[in-house]
Amino acid sequence: MTRFGVLRTAIFAAALVPAAALVYGFFTNDLTANPIDYITDTTGYTALSLLLITLTVTPLRRLTGRNELIRLRRMLGLLAFFYACLHVSTWLVLDWFFDFASMAADVVERPFITLGMTTFLLLLPLAVTSTAGMIRRLGRKWQQLHRLVYVAGVTAIIHFWWVVKADFREPRLFALALSVLLGFRAWWTLRTRLSSRS
Amino acid sequence: MLIKKPSDIPYSEVTPRGLFLRRREFIHTAAAGAIGAAAGLSPLASARVGAQARTKLPNVRKSPLSTSETANSYEDATGYNNFYEFGTDKEDPKANAQRFNPRPWTIKVDGLVKTPTTLDIDTFVKPHALEERIYRMRCVEGWSMVIPWVGFPLADVIKRLEPQPSAKFIEFTTLYDVGRMPGQRYPVLQWPYVEGLRLDEAMNPLAILVVGLYGEVVPNQNGAPIRLVVPWKYGFKGIKSIVRIRFTDKQPRGSWEVSQAREYGFYANVNPNVDHPRWSQATERRLGEFRRRKTEMFNGYGAQVASLYSGLDLRKNY
Image 1 (tube, each protein chain N blue to C red):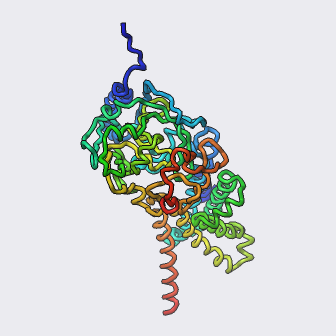
Image 2: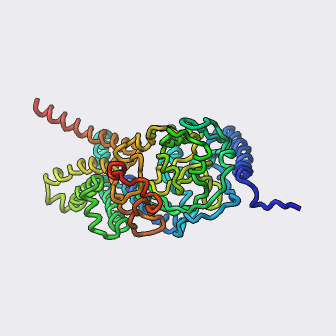
Image 3: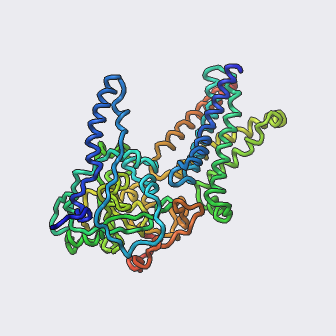
């Protein structure tokens, strides 16, 4: 394996650790007194973290000039989506056990769930169109479509913010990280536009 | 010949076994710290050794006010709760309160009371016979437990302290000591934690001051050495580690009310019909159960407490 291959595999394995820990905790009865809430929190937290890590790839590539980093982006994005799926399934199966009426009421009435669902629905088409075939078929539109990930980042963080009762240290940190990551992009876009005009 | 049975030992003579153990631990930790420091390691690394010991409470009577529902496990009740003074995650209190020493401890009694005074915890508890009260506990977050508390009616304490006729409310304050309660380093809530009740609510037989659970001295993470339990209200009303009781004619403002008045009101009665602005309160998850269950009005204690609120709009006074 090349050095890059090793890095890729290591990142992949590391990203699976939270899920593996949940499985291990399930069998050793070590998911706190409230396992459903614990699984919900852990999968949501990991999904959001991976989403932000995914958004770090491009700025990191531009800043370091290491273009091969781009090859990590799809994997990281799909891992974030994997945890988002676990998060939504936990809500669907473990939390409400397919009580669709209550869940529908939740999505409509609870802004933080509305935003959580919005985030998931924004990520869904990105995951579906992540294959090489789709990238080819969509051409320029692919890039435009995948800018939805910026919106998903924002909705995900508000979703997190609104579920917290009083300790906003973590949501604040996530919000700051996202602002920096989106700030790079805004700055670069602005600079390109200004220089192309002159 | 009079042979004193172990069960005759009054509460005041029960020295939590943890204190003995902690002394030994202290020596141990100090030694380990010295070695660690010598080796260039942080002495804090070894400061986590040891845990509280469990001490049985003598002479605990059963109470007809207990529920017959199955209690949650000791591990559930002592390993999963909110006590922000020791951290904001559910497992933080257990992890961070192990070395908290609830002795010496005094309770200041002031405000509109016959004789303002400061009482040692043991003097404070001594006049009261201990009862076991198995209560449902409903957290505002939507989960619940059944916990066998040990304590005595708050009403008895109030009668003994003799508030002035002008007193309409009772206000409690938690210890503020950043060195002993590491969660207080961050202004997550307004410290010290404050909670209060209307005096007639406080006189209700269901309201108790708690010094134990599962027949044992209450562990640090659950509010040692003394806390409030008001089973028809959301758990956050049950203020922990009380150092001050004040009688007043003005409605106290609890720490949660101060932080978010729209979300946490003074009354905080369990009410499935009045949602938290961000989530529903119609259902709850009893820890240990898979499916949610319906939340009961006043947490199922309506027969005893509903009359306190006749004529009061519970939607406005949430």
